Structures are given as C-alpha cells and as structure tokens.
Length: 207
Image: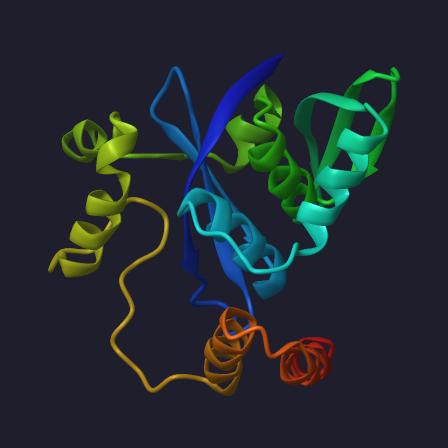
C-alpha cells in the first residue's frame, strides 16, 4: 500500500559530517521517515523548500526544464523498498507511461520542483518510520510552523523523539566551510570559482 508523505525539513546527520537527513512526514498520520542523503542533493531540495532561487539552474532544475520542453509529465514519486539499509525509489511518469529507478534524493528533488505527490510503501514506513510525540505533532501539522518547529527542536533541553538527538555545538567542518563558499560564489555568479569548489567537495565526499 502507498502512503503519501511530504518533505518537512533537512537536518545535519550526526552519523557523518558529509551527510544530511531528509525528513518525510506522512500526510494522514504521525510518522516521519528520515533518509540520509548527500550534501548536493540536500542543498538542491532545501533551496526549493525555502523558496530560494539560484542565478543559474542546478542539475535538478535542468532536468525539470528538459522534461517541460519534451512535454513529459511526472505523475508521482514512489519510495518502494528498503534493502540492507538502502532506500530505493521509482519515478513514475504520466506521459509517456514510464517507471524509472532512482535514488530517493534525486526523486524527491524532482518531485518538489514538479509539484507531484511523494509516496512511501507502507512496509518501508512500518520498518523505518519514526513517530512524533503527540505534544510536538501540533507544532508541525501546519506547514507554516515547520521552520519554527525545527528551531524549537534545537533549543530543547530534553532528548528529542523526533529522530535525531540534538548535537552539541562544534566547529564547522571543512565541507561546511566549502559549502558556504560555494553558495556565495553561486550568488555572486562567480561560476569558475564555484566549479573549483564543487570539484574539491566532490573529492572529499568520494573518499
């Protein structure tokens, strides 16, 4: 059975300084599904969730532009399986009728741009879903309160049930510093510098 979810935020993962957690919450329930994704995909999804635009299209923006030009329509994104700790997803097209294998991060990055629903297999949600405490559910039922909820979560003194405990403050990692420089270079349209920073980030994340 398919259960519809929506992305409600991205947070740094305590398991790896080079990874982030995408949090998907079921629309008609209390459970959320955290999926570990890479920094580039996290940035791509976060830009759309925060309503930010880049001077030039990112990879997922370009993919959407190509789909639009080809008059190809995505019907839905479906996170259909979880095997050996790895999530699997499908991008299901309305026209032409296609069903393509994809990483969940890429699938969600396209879904938020194309404004199509995201579904999770019920077995996957049963296996990996996390339930919010009832007191905190009221904070995130309204999408307008999502950013406030995550800010409050960081300020909580008690350990959170949301899915990841609050981490103590620590110095910025090399990848975080490079990501800030990359964002600044893109904003200033210094694409030559941005390309060099992307190459350096890629070397670090592939180690």
